[in-house]
Every structure is written in C-alpha cells, then in structure tokens.
Length: 387
Image (cartoon, rainbow, N blue to C red; front, top):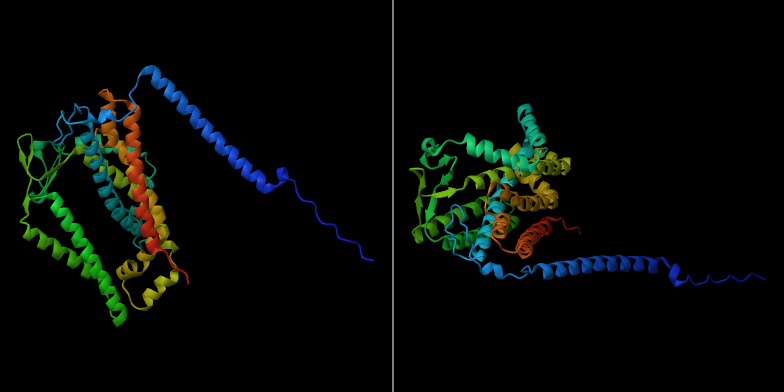
C-alpha cells in the first residue's frame, strides 16, 4: 500500500514574502509622506510667525532694476523681468546645445583619427577640459579672456568689417524686420524642407538611385528662406563703433559670450567621449562593408558610421543637454541675467524668497521635462525595430 502524500500547509500571510514586500513599500511611503507633512507643518508655522508672503503677488511689483542690452524699464512688473530671464536662459540653451553637439562630434571623431597630431590634440582637449570645474572655467573665461584679453572699445577688432569684438561685448550683423514673422517663416521652410527630403528618400527607395535627401532638403530650405526674405523686404544692419559703445547690428553682452563659450567648451568634452565610444560600438563589419563598396573615409563616416553611432549615443547626449541647460544657472555668478540672476535680484529687492525661487525651480523643471520629451522622441525614432 503506497504512502499518501501530505499536502503542504499554507504559509501564514505574515510570513509570505509577497506580503512582506508590499508592507515594507507601504511603510517606506508612509514614512516619506510623514516627513513631508512634518516639514510642511514647520514651514507653515514659521511663515505665520514671520508674516512672510507666500503667494505670487510679488510678480505685480515694479522690478526696480534694468537688464543690460534690454528695453526692460524699472517700472515694469517683476513678471516681465522673469520673462526676459526665461528667454535669456532659452537663448543660452539653444545656442549651447547646437554648438556643443557640433564641437563635441568633431573632437570625438578627431580622437579616432589616424593622424597622430589630430588624435593627440583631441585627447589633450578632452582630458584637460573635462577635469576642470565648470565654475572655475566660467570665471576664467569671463575675467581673463573676455574682460582682459579682448581689446578696449577704441581698439576693437573688426573681423571682415562685419563684427565688432571688444571687452564691452561682441556686435554681430542683424536683420531689419519683424522677428516673429521671420521665425514663423524659417520654421515653415524647415518643415517643407523635411517633407521634401522624406519624399526624396521614398522615391530613391523605389528607383534604387542615390537619394541625396540632405542636399535636396538644404537647398529647399535655403531657397525658401531667401524667398521669404525678399518677399517681406528684410535687410541687414551692420554694427560699428560709436564712441564708447557700438551701434547697429545685435550686441552680445560679454557675460553672455563667456557663459555660452564656457558651457560649449565644457560640455563638448563630455560629448566627444560619448561620440567616440558610440563610434567604437558600431560593428566593425559596417566599416568593412563601406570599404568594400569603395566609399571614401568621409562618406563612410557620414553615411554609415555616424548615423548608427548617434542611435547609440542619443540617451547619453540627452543627459548632457540637460546638464548644459541646468548649468546655465551659473551665469548668475558673472551677472548674466538669466532666471537665477533675476530671482536673486528680485529677492534682494524685497520680494519673498520662497515663492520666487520656487517659481524659478518650476520653470527649470519645465524646460528640462520638455527637453527630455524631445530627446526621447528622437531616441524612439532612431531605435532599431526588431522583427
């Protein structure tokens, strides 16, 4: 007679590993909420004792300060000053991201060059710059380069008679006309050029011929911009030295140049390493296949290697873009009027600190989240789709 198998007894709920995991997570969450509640209670109690303003009514108060190179009047509300600071932050972010990507890509490619001199210079640049504190580099760029190495206004450099470079800033040629109208026109031209490039790629896929989509896209974009320029009657305004300053064109504040240059130099050293590692991560067979069909070195890099390398590099590049945007707040140390500087001056003029800096934090958070959405969009578009 075979022995009966005994059924295992049910584990008590207080010893069940799943129950214990959920219990620990709930306890941790409750502890966090309790800490936040305690901190918020202390904050409310201290605010009540000191009668500190906690709303955003201070945005309606007069700014009581001006921004160099800006038409902001002291009597305008603080809200307008924050808008100008927000726009200045976006200018630094857009220009910095574009230039850092270009410079970092070139240096990353240079680090893999077969030319000893080019490879060594790229290595020295990366190892030197990325090991410097950004704040120190920014201070050096502002004090030693812009304010000391650049000439005085009476001895300003005039490259090609198109620019005016001095320690009072850099003046560049600028257009005459409506900026909003031109911006909408450029965006429309870029969209049409993108559509033309996509159509060209589809036609080439059907015919088997070389698409040259980028060439068609660039030509379409430039032609549309020229057409918009002529139709709306835009013109150029060249800068020139006028006494102790400049007139005409667009003047870039010295602190703006120092901030953008420092961010681009610093961030490009990190991007260079990302690009170098991503190029090395591309299968060697891709390069061998390009050699087999007799592509030149530049064609192999531009058409085969770099597109696949950027697919690998995109998540890491997104992190560097976010770092650059957040590091733009260091502009406050050299008196560049971005968001952080505006908030500091506003608080110094008597506005409540908590809502002013809370608003600044939320704006930076919004910029970073939008940047993350854009990077994630391109990351999904570039991702390989497995079948």
